[in-house]
Image (tube, rainbow, N blue to C red; front, side):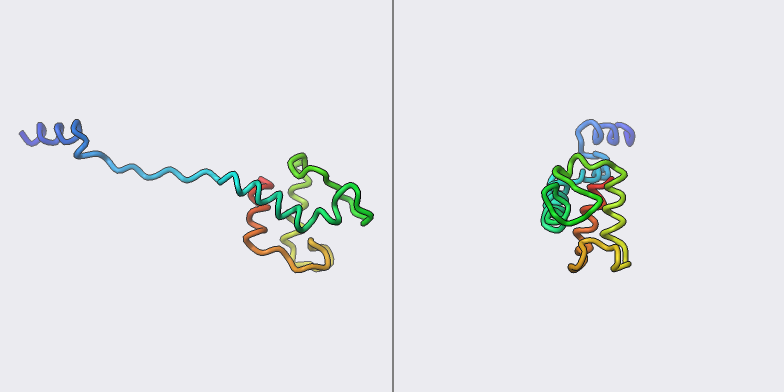
Length: 105
């Protein structure tokens, strides 16, 4: 009788096993946000029409190679003010850095 009751609970859904909620995928806004952060903080010097001398000129952040993305992350996260980007400005916020790191993956 005990097993019959347990079986009925499972069939009826009353004894439903609680499953762990799967992790949320990163929101699309994260990647849109990365492009906005890069545009606001990097585009003025790193666009193809800029007269600023720089190794990196970008017209579309989505076409940046993984190697260049790693360099961008390294430059925005370094503590060395001589090479940190954005140059001659306040460093990016930790939240902005995290968004750029996620974009660079």
